[in-house]
Length: 405
Image (tube, rainbow, N blue to C red):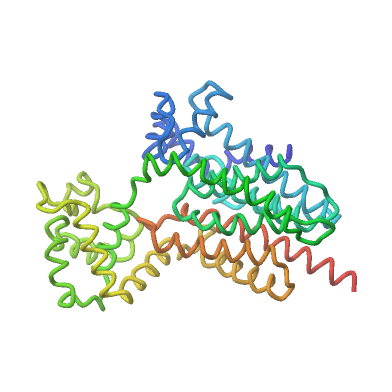
């Protein structure tokens, strides 16, 4: 862990971090991060679905402006140190230390400093899956009820912190059963209930505040759907003429067409059509004093999707590609390919836990691609961390098995 702390604390010499340092001097927290920071400072804790609570806890630990960043670096260091310790303990090899090399990948050290909830999500997710995976592999270990409660709380946070995490209500339960409902390697019915009952209760307990306060991002996603679908050449506008007339009263289709024509796939990388001050407002597509509500607009977009599902799918694939196509360490096609390899490996090895985990990450990636409002790398940070980590685990496993034979 101390080595990982040193790595994270010494990355200020890297070019990417120097850019962040320059940004920090003009105000480190911006956009969503600044809104969450302000909410935590005002002691308004529920903002961006538990993220402001995380910030508030950070302020309790270190009562300074940069507390969320300081705590985030410490958490990243702990999680990387913990994962390496688990590999070293299970495989009994110093090859586990190769994972420290991941700290030198630009997205890892940059996101280790940033405090967006997606970055918190990625590191918490890695801790959760590593613990349940190796706990399920080490069948001779004894785990207490507190282990189940603690991990159920982590899973509950992951379930609600991002909308795409809702699949964990089922997949998280399966992971927990495979890890903690066993006696001498055999899953027992009585132990299943002892795992599932606290898991479900804690999930509900964490979900109620999120349900009460709302997620508040639906309209942003529908606007992105509309803009991106309009950019598809195969879009049959005559088929959805009535829905387009309704939607056009909320968002100006003529401006959106100009936006898509001028920016192409780069327009997927952000919601500039949503920014009144960008390029003197020439791409701002919202109509003043709209004749239709955002709910009516959303309904018209849903009808368009129903009538043009192939166009919708193509627009979502392009949205993912806009986030993934980078020719550097931010490329997402490579970790996605690794994820598919991990999935195949789990099937060949008949590793039930790894099969559940990797298929869950694949589902998470699919849900993210379908629902994301803009093509941001950060939405897939969890997938990238998991893929790079577990591909190293598989390589170590293959290497040790080849030596054994």
